[in-house]
View 1: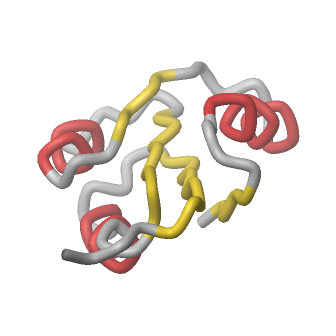
View 2: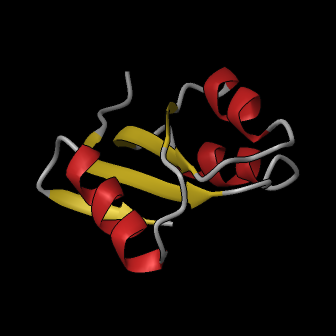
Length: 83
């Protein structure tokens, strides 16, 4: 049994279906949660992220700083990793 570290990973994404899978699988086995903040993708980003076990939240793009803050606010752990 693998112990997950109390780390929340959040990923800001838009139209990343061809890359999001590698990003999620690189961390999902050792962190407590993976969250994808989708900024209005029109490809399969959301479906890929959900299939790999990420929690997906959609939030219209307010700019990088506000989107990053939105992502931080969704995390349940004190330690955060933004990818």
